[in-house]
Image (cartoon, rainbow, N blue to C red; front, side, top):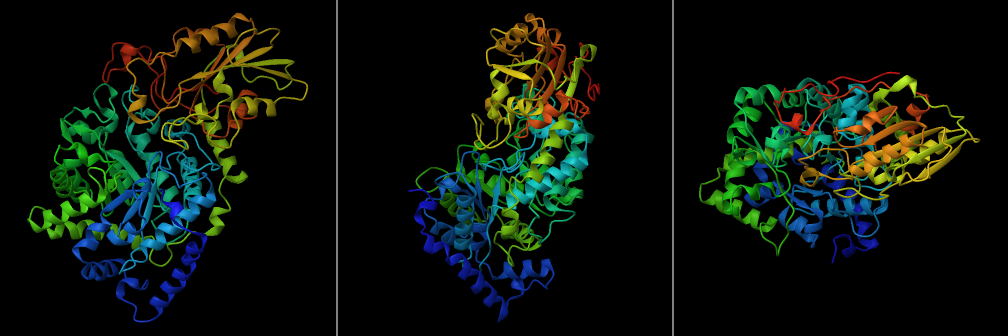
Length: 611
């Protein structure tokens, strides 16, 4: 039986009685930790000294929604956190009502615990609140990097925070601050770019967008999470969860700056990478996690593992728990429930045994729990763990979508514009649009959209084809040909090509040639004799080959999200293109090797035409 199906509407009314009860508790015999007038550190110390070892370890658990088949486990084990992984959703239809009901139910169980410690829920809101149908989906990080506009990134992630908080969730696993070096990596689109300075600027802007100028009790302040520490963008051959091979000086110069900037900006959480540095898994690297992050850089928030990532340390799960906690992990993301291996009950039992055996110190437990509680107090979760309905009403609003449209406009990089092919007139007699991707919102949004890998007509928004039809005059005939066949009497052709949606390791590729189908589609458009503008939807630069030569104009549109109108705005001249490449564009597959300077890039970092 699924999680939310266990609850009746009558039970959910109990959420409101719990609010009343919580207010009553605060009114009489209020312990220090429940007094918001007390300093945060006083509240942390007071609560910590009242907690049993079981209650402390419970705070270090982050369980996935799908693995908690018995909701009473939230109270029994006192989870500090829960999350929705890429494919983890409330039961039933994916809509705001089900999300709100589920979050209320989860928090209600958390507040049944002896000390009434609220739970913090996390989600991969990496380009908008992208798990929920009807929200505003922004361009992925690579597109936002192409804007070179930190203020716009901050505005976009503030809107994301509003929409996340509007569903009762207060923790976003964003921004990704990887400094991606090799486009073969399937997560290249989750990186703002190849330059540490650019990534650092965008990371700070994103954190301010999510958390505000400081993490606070404001209902729209959502905990940000800088990820994935460290070197995930520099693995050999761009392999996901691979090995970054470099000396410490290079690691510090290339990959550490965004984390320094994030900590200075007050980021409250950092997620650790699956990857290794010189053969050592990051989840077991005490030097980097404790000595560097917590010691040298003074990080005061908490460290969370990636999805079942500690399981990769060794075949012995108990040893993995020992290694990761002693390395400095404070919260462990556990996607497995009772009845499976390496589940949250097993984690709790193992960690409790490790403390009894003297292999994990009580001080290490107290440090981890103090960090988690500190964030919860700073966020005001003890005073107000519930959803602000005024935020829910803003989800997917026209105002939010307008900002996303501006993000699309500024993210597009015009790579070629022969004889000023663009902008097209809105009064063309016959405009032909070719390529299935032109009318596919899934390809337009990419991975991490509604589901983990992203695919299909996933949510509400305007496809490129719809946006073009809405932009042209009533006298313009717009013909759509998915396969590009039978193009006749066209004044201009718009070809939309690119990659299928993907996420994480499923997007790793050794050959980044534009698909043969894409090249053939553009060739058909060129053979028509009409002017051809090509739009590339991709999570990274691709090797273009003859496709660039066959195009009169060429736009790198990245993965723009739901607001296809932003592309039409550039095509028809309502807005001038301003996007600049956030990474150099390789000329060949051989050029993709990190450090290969045998040939110049096709386009350098920062390139982008304006007319």
